[in-house]
Amino acid sequence: MSFEEDPNDGDASVTEKFRESISKFTLISTPCQPQLNSAVATVHSSELRRSFRVAAAVKSRKPEVKCHVDALNNPTSPGKGKRKASNASLSKNAAKKLKRGYAPPEAYAHLSPLTDYLAYGLDVVFCGINPGYMSAKRGHHFAHPSNHFWKCLHQSGFTPRLLPPSEDSSLPKTFNIGLTDLVDRPSSEASELSCSERVSSVPILLGKLALHRPRFLCLVGISNWEILQKALLQMTTGPSKASGSSGASKASRASEKNVGLQPFKLCYPTIADPVSDTSSNISETLLFVVPSTSGLVTQYQLPAKIKLFAQLKSLVDQSQSELDTSEMKCIAVSA
Image 1: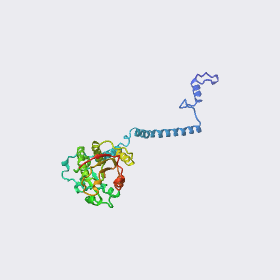
Image 2: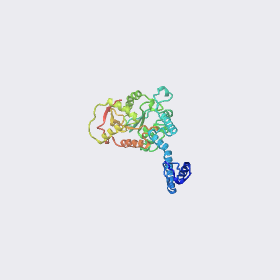
Image 3: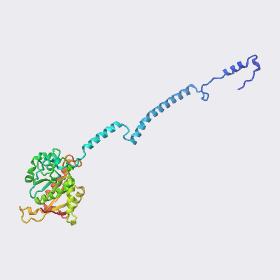
Image 4: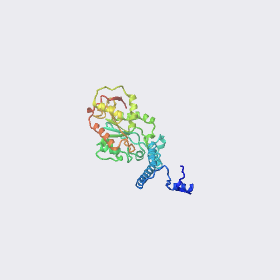
């Protein structure tokens, strides 16, 4: 800006004129920002404060949002201490439930096998896998307090009252029921038996059945049936006749599920000199499978086990002539 001399100013110096000119202007600290009146300035100020608060809130949420995102991407990252503690407890529980490995016979040499309770022409013989530790120690079948066998037997109608294991010897004479095991040596768990032990015990079991000829063999334990089934398939005399009966169809479906009535039957030769009037009529044994009655088996709860026992009871209550077994595979067995 230039200033010209005013002839009316007389002797005023150029400096004084410059000062007078400067005094007419107001110096603003922010040259590029226009002046606002007080009302507008108040509004703008409040808006700025609100904007700052929103920005601060958003900024404070960012770690929380990131935390949630991290949790989705990596579930173990948030709360690492709690997650690790939970995993550790689960690992301990899993370790407790691990099955035992093979145990040689000398590991339980101090325990004795259980006595078979068998007689000729029984309605059903229940066959366990092998005596458990508690059963062998007490000398009675299915003697562990958590075992469901005696409850299943009673609640399915086989016995009018709940029998204690100590009365196992009374079953053949009083209730026409027998008891035996596939493998006679005791152990704490069935997993301590070798597969070869089970397979080599099948001929012994078949010999017992051929000698006593029960109407039904009930295998207590699905693994029991798997061992016997393999042996029977090797012994089969060929494909059975296709009759299309509903009873055989049910047996085939049960075989796929490994429980219930199975599509096999043990066939015996005719007795030349029967020991009783009815013994000559028993020419076959039908096979039925129930899950293990051990309390450690959780896949089948007590009500499901009782239901299967009740199915067996309904079959036992039918006469031999009412059961259509023509479609079942006949396995010839001799004593």
